[in-house]
Length: 204
Image 1 (cartoon, rainbow, N blue to C red):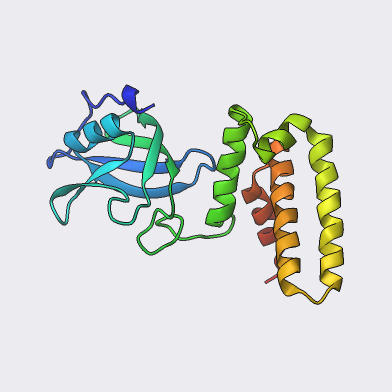
Image 2: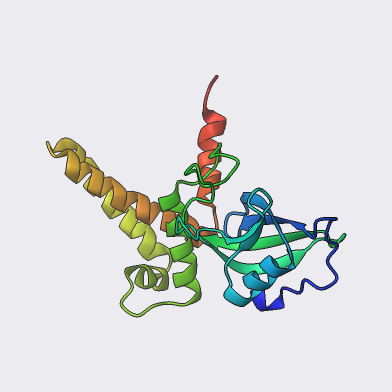
């Protein structure tokens, strides 16, 4: 947690900076790399959101202060040489200013933002069930209930595909994907792994 981020004893460079790596706390993907001074790390600790130091503007900045795509810090770690800080974060939107989920592009296995957000919701509902939540009810019902819903939604997709309404097909397909991802979550299989399998099956 950010209250445990102790920046005393860090090995800052000649400019008073340390390298900071922001990593998605659910998927493990590296989102971005930036720099921070002691003030930026203290602001991160105080607010719970990632702050950095801009070497080009020579100014303190919070990630997402203009775009709204903040990085909520769930945990902070320091490497063995004490010259690099790892922030495990919950991204509130794309991490890159170019609109991609990471500053390294959205390569094979990268999750679309909506699937990534669903994954976080599933994890939150599993850890802290919410009264009236459809997701919480399904998770409480166990694996069989989730699998039953997948069967029902798959049938709805088939029926919608035979209809003349493209919109209905899109809606039923979305329902199926939702329940399929929930089943993957319940089994502990990352959606990213499914995308990797598809990529592996792709022929040159």
